[in-house]
Length: 128
Image: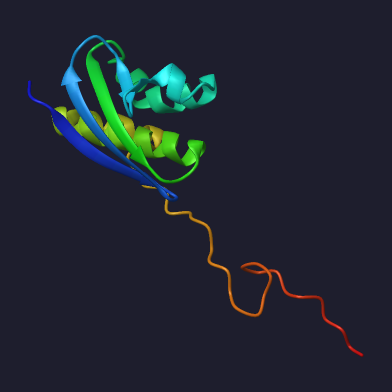
């Protein structure tokens, strides 16, 4: 099997993933997953698609991540891994879609409007 690549996005984060057959190593920006994401919750988020397909020890994953915060990066990486797994075996798509891993979450920060302190907050109104 050759390298399979996929891309995932969430908020401002973009993750590019390269999947090869291997022993389950996950390397993000030349660092192991437990160094890049010290939180066990974020590690769990990244590994969810692999756990769903029981393929945790089958593939080595190498990823590049740009932008966003740690939560957005973890969710972008989850989407990229799910897309790469579907490229390898299209029959897995229904199982991953049922768990919600194939959907790109479109929610992002609303832009700040002029004449207001934030996106929706208004300056205090003064009648007199």
